Length: 401
Ligand SMILES: *Cc1c(COP(=O)(O)O)cnc(C)c1O
Image (cartoon, rainbow, N blue to C red; front, side, top):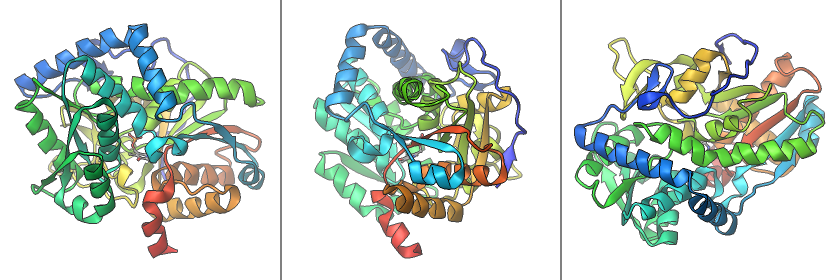
């Protein structure tokens, strides 16, 4: 387990996790690196989002959908037995209890509602393990939109059940046969397809990555996690604000949404990456999928393949705002191995009766480790976002345990 960079005291800054700077910048990261036609399409999404986000009618419609369809607000669960064993007070923000089983629904409902408002009739999405594809297909069905989901051929073989779910929901799943035939190539292919379809289609990106305004917009759609948790913590925690706020980081959307609720507090923010997908902890400056950020690269600057047991953390980079939060020292980013995550999942299952997604188990693995080595002092209050449920990972657990 490596901690990068060294700890600095959190300094609440005006504007941290507010709107990005001009041209979608978070410090030196972000931007809109895309072909001309997509720059124009992104500009339209930006304009529509700004207008919608300032409109109480849109906010009300989204809040209603999140309540009646997705099951919000999600509970804050004290992990009592595990807390006793670790000597800290651990609270779980239960995104695993949302419809479709992860935080991804928060973002896709927002983008689907925006697409409908823009008069688009179809959602385009990329998916790795199929979680974002299923969420997009779900939101599309709910709002009467079509859905076209790009998925690597290898992932299609590995995730047959989610492919069927998407088709059952009425989505078209398009196999991607280029490159490594996984998420990175599916994303490139989805963007390419959008170039020819910007008039009637909205590209629904699944994390805080991609060209401006996506990193900002997706964080805003996910901030419901942090905003709810802020109120719940104020009511239920001895310290009001938790001492530490922890979430797993693939592209970084559940973490960004969680952090956004606490950026102006004294809470220490910790993002937990997979050892083999540590964009924030170990990436270098680069440009991928329309955005300047930190990516895993080889000696020649080629972006390399990520490897994680958790499909949702299998992305070679991290969203630009996380890169910026890292530089500011406002958040820190740590890594956890596959084995540590699996052990943490078993521990949560047996101590609390909750089988977490492998992604979320990474966040817990850091909490367990940090409580043991003093990084989390005894008696600390810890808020951890449990980003999803483990049903999708049962066959992986079955092979390993
Ligand atoms: C997709 C996914 C993630 C990773 O995505 P972020 O954008 O980093 O939040 C984490 N947990 C679960 C359960 C997921 O499905």
